[in-house]
Amino acid sequence: MSGQSQFCLLRERRFLPFFCTQFLGAFNDNVYKNALVILLAFHAAAMTTLSSGTLVNLCAGLFILPFFLFSATAGQLADKYEKVTIIRYVKLFEICIMMIGAVGFFQGNLVLLLSALFLMGLHSTIFGPVKYSILPQHLQADEIVGGNGMVEMGTFLAILIGTIVGGLLVAQVQFAELVSITVIAVACLGYLASRAIPATPAAAPDININWNPVTETWANLKFTKQNRTVFLSVLGISWFWFYGATLLAQFPNYCKDVLGGNEHVATLLLTMFSLGVGTGSLLCERLSGHKVEIGLVPFGSIGLTVFALDLFFASPAAAGGTLIGAGEFLARAGSVRILFDLVMIGVFGGFYIVPLYALIQTRSERSHQSRIIAGNNILNALFMVASAAMAVALLAAGFSIPQIFLATALLNAAVAIYIYTLVPEFLMRFLIWLLIHTIYRLEKSGLEKIPEDGPAVIVCNHISFVDALIIAAACRRPIRFVMDHKIFRVPVLSFIFRTGKTIPIAPKKEDPVLLEKAYEDIAAALRDGDLVGIFPEGRITDSGELYPFRAGITRILERTPVPVVPLALRGLWGSFFSRIEGRAMSNPSRLMPLRRIALVAGDAVPPQQATPEALQQIVLGLRGDWR
Image (cartoon, rainbow, N blue to C red; front, side, top):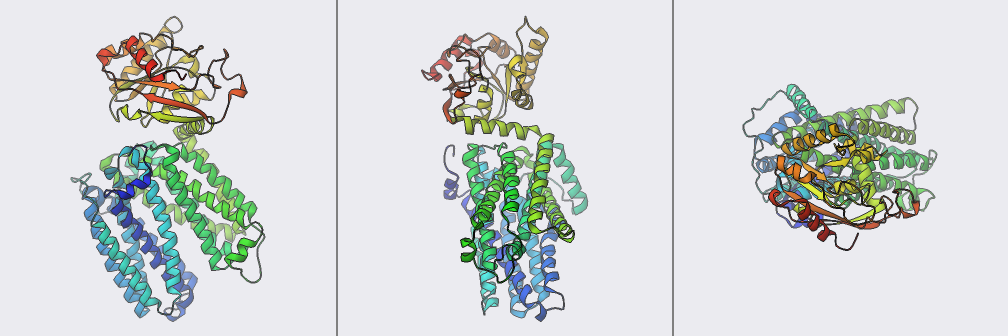
């Protein structure tokens, strides 16, 4: 799919049926939930002595309870058995659930209605681990981000449309018939869509199911913690659901008490937020260049804080009087700013969440992937419960709803700083991503010639202080760069180089010990199957032309014979980070935004043919006249 839009996946059988299945499931969840909540809010007295407020909160608890009870088991089932078979059984289960719910609507039977809601939570619990772990089995490496973006967009769009449709149906006189026909029909369509999903092999067919949810949940979390980056990504996702649940739960009262709007204004707020998440999720593929770009995660967290802060400042004083409709609200001063904040919170939420899901899918062991996602779902549910508890506590303490937005924004900033301190790779990738999306406009050609796995050496011409960062931003795989120890110590850049596990090297006459250690580290990296990147000139050019390639590449290949992939950077000569005026980074006028540059890759060269002279000629040919 390299270079193609993620929408092309909708023409693929390996994606479209699954996308339709998950969309219809999320849609049905929300049609049923919202129809039930509104029914209980207005007609609870006819069914029970409990208050409508108690029942609404009971509904929320019943739907989320299965995530705590059964997620661990669901993760094991998704790893042990073929996933498409599980999906089809889940969809048949959904049809049965909706039949129970339909009887509950016709009879006004609260027990049946709440039982169906609990079972829909169970349905979502079982489907969740399959939903995310099936994508890496059907999609190529450069499709993972786009596929996740489509799934997140579809999920939030389904939530929005389902919520609106559920509210409209239950408002009709014949609501029991309309809701029942809709949810059963959609469940049947979901099953039919699942019949077209291609089969996938079981990830871990030999595992023994542990039916104890407590011990299995603990085991899943312990396993996830072994991969620190994956575990912190899980915590990051859970934090997003804390953040999102806090904001979404306040929308109805924010609309009524602060904005003075009716239910149509509340729907407008939800629509703007959902459209924002969908847009941000889809933009991730374009901004990440078809690869898992975790540099978008800090970018997303910045936006989540900034626009939640602005929502606090944009909110008016508490409203009073008659509630206004959407038209009157839009005509009021300040309404566009509020809607813009909600859209941008959603957009940056998409930037934040999609790369984290993709990171879990690509960096977790395939045999444990579903169980890790199940553990993630448990933590998500726990964080959402915590968000409700925090909101209740803040309201009890006298906080207004805009002040809750402010507290959430500040908490988000604190959590982000904490996570990026623990895993500086996120911040490092953000700085690299920022570099090639502000100062430079990078064109890529032939990078598919870099092997997807296994050891190889990358060689490239050396024009500026940021060459390694540009190559790292363009390549899908991490690269262990070998770099002059003086450049390695440049402030700010040093943080990025250290985080990227760069190998510093020095000439023998300056530091023979560091030189030998560098060659040892290079050999170890290649033995581990890593990509190693070197600049064979041994220095940054001060003329724009290539210096002779040194013999270090020969020494590397004699010890560890691996393929060599030649690269050429174009257009960096004369930029702010080059030595065109003798000293780099001394003339701010050369810091031009969106300067056009290019990175070109040639065919891999066998180690026996990879002499310094031959590689230099190849790189020179790739570079051409554009320095």
